[in-house]
Structure formats: C-alpha cells, structure tokens
Image (tube, rainbow, N blue to C red; front, top):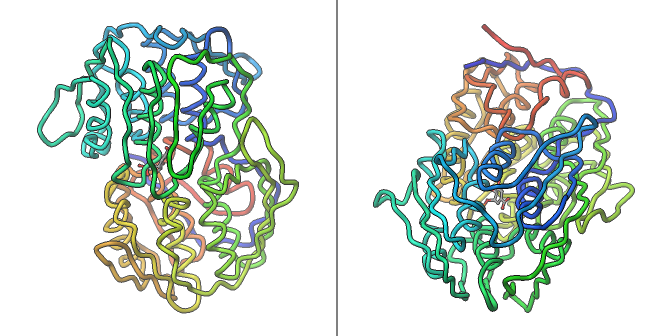
Length: 435
Ligand code: S3P
C-alpha cells in the first residue's frame, strides 16, 4: 500500500483537464461491443475500473485496443454476438462495470462468472439479479447475493416491466442492456430520476429509447450503428478540483470540457448555494452529452441543508462535500443518503471516522451526516477501505489542515482518476508519497 499525504497549500492556479467520465466510458465500450463495425472513442477514462470492463468485453469477443494517438477502437460483435468466455471475469473494484456486464450477458445464451476485489465482493448484487431473473436468466452464487456470481444467460429472453426499488442508474442500465437482446419492449419505471447516460448513449448509437413520464422503453434487437465517441471529462472527478479551489485561499482554476449533464451536477448546485464562485463557460453538446468549461475561484462558503431529492445527481460527491462543509461557516446537513453505505465502502461511517480523527465536527445519522465549521487539525492516517473517493476527499481536506493528512492507500485512486497527484501538484498543491 502506498501512503499519500497532503499539506496546507498556497493558491491553486491553472487551466487543467481531468480524465474522462467513468460512467460514459464503461457505456461507450459496451455499446461499441454491441455495434457491428468499428467504433472509436476519444477521451476514454483509462482508470482501472474502465480497463477492467474493456478486458471483460474482450473475453466476450470484442476487439478493443488503443492506437498511438490515444484513440480507442472497438470492433463490435453485434447484439446477440457475445461469445462464451473461458475464464471468470474479474471486475476489480467496479460496481458499475459488474452490474452493467451482468445485464449485458443475462440475455445471451452463455454462462459468465463474475468476481471482484474485497470491496466489490461485499456489495449487494440482488438489486440486479432480481430483475434479470425476470428476463429468464438464472444465477449461481451465495445466499447473500454477493460476488462471485455466475450468470446463466437465457436463450429465450422475455421482455419485462420493472419498477426500480432503489434510485440506481446501474440497475436501470442493467435492465436496459438486457432488453437490447430481448424481442419486444422492455420498460423500466424510475420514480426518482437517476443519471441518464444509458438513455443518451442508446439514442446516440441508434437504439431509440422512449421516455414517457417516469417510464423508459427500450425495444430489443435494434441495430446499433458503430460510432465515433468523445467522452467528456468526469464531473465527479472535477469535483475534487473544484472543492480544492474553493477552500484554498487565492485560488482561481479553469477545468476544460467537463460533462454537465444535469443528472450529475447536484454538487455544483449545492456548492453555488453555499456561496461558491463557480462559472460554467462555453456550454455545448457533444455526442449527446452536455459539456462546459468550469472556472472556480476561492470562496467563503456557508453551510446549507442539502435537499435529499438532489442525492441521485450528486451521489458520488458526498465525501468531497464533507471537505467543503468542514471549511464552511455553520452546519451542512446531508440526509436521505443511506445508499452511501453500500458504495465502494460504507461512505457514511468511513467519512465520519476519518473526519473525527482529523478534528472535523461531524455527527453521524443512520441516513447521512451533519458537518460543521471546524479547525481542521489533520495529523491523522485515514483508512481508505479500497475507496478511491475517500482517498481523494481526504487529500483535498489536507490542503486546508494544520498538520498533513495521510491516506493509508493512495493506489486506490487509480480506479477512477489516474494522474490525480501530479495534476494537483501542477497547480500548486503539495501531495507526496510517504514511505
Ligand atoms: C453509476 C451510478 C451510480 C454511481 C456510480 C456510477 C453509473 O451508482 O454511484 O459511481 O455509471 O451508472 P448507483 O446506480 O448504484 O447509484
């Protein structure tokens, strides 16, 4: 394990880019695999999660490689064309990777075993196996519904109508992907909207998705067109830089080409309500997604009560919001977010423990946390629990703490944000490995 430490920083300044969007990168590779012909992808996130999905898709028959210019090429097999892999598929740390892939294979007549690291093998998978069973797939695994699981795909899938019991884009997308190789119309009912990257990319690749109120309809056996994809920078990764600039006095940074899909930008709205000086410039559309450049300046923040209905649009951003909240005047109340307990780690209890040990005033609730203005003492070693967003959030908090903050395992950042340390140091931060 590589320990990483961050210490109090001077102003952060510069024009930067952050890596490609994780959600869109997984989906681009999957859609390219289902299209016949060659799709190309620029801006793909080359983090471990997405590279794991690329390997899994190769094992299912796709030809995927990166050329010398950094563009990725996917030679697809067409819907229904996945082949039987010879080995279990190791999905690392990636909940999105495994849940989307389970949906994909469930309606192909192949058996595929999935496994992952200690974090992924403790996360709930019944939320996908329950709807996928209704298509006719069966599953072998343990009673707890955790990985390893073997999906025995059906050769005679039936279309389903499924109402999501949890607000989860991963579950919605698993059902939509299963619907692609199913004759007839598959419907997902989503009472609480979640990120709509699957809907957008299905349309972009030529699969019409009908949205009718809270119902999303996909008709199976459409022909996917091979496409040229440009993946925008990840708004969740940009959040770490945005909060860093907001809390380090004198900062002024611009982040280029960031995805601003409204289903993802709940943190930006929250930070603006807290008094954050964040401006979206050059707003545009690319490959069916909304994109902008983002300018952020140091700001005096004030705590707010985050509306719980905003949670799906900022579900990955609560750990970094805690860092902003510790530097804001008053209290920041985050409730209605029990889903955080089944992310890469139990993000409520891991944040509470780490923040307390760094001197931050935080109260744990069953469904969230309340953080109040704190003198951030630092000096602690934080347990990252195989969670990239925990590691990055504490390293950003360390930029404002009296003594350095150390995370016990910096390598987990590779999951979603390769180059995180160098990027921050290039704009004035002080992050370094500790032996
Ligand atoms: C994702 C959906 C979210 C999010 C994850 C990526 C996706 O998970 O936390 O990082 O790409 O669909 P849930 O669907 O479980 O909320």
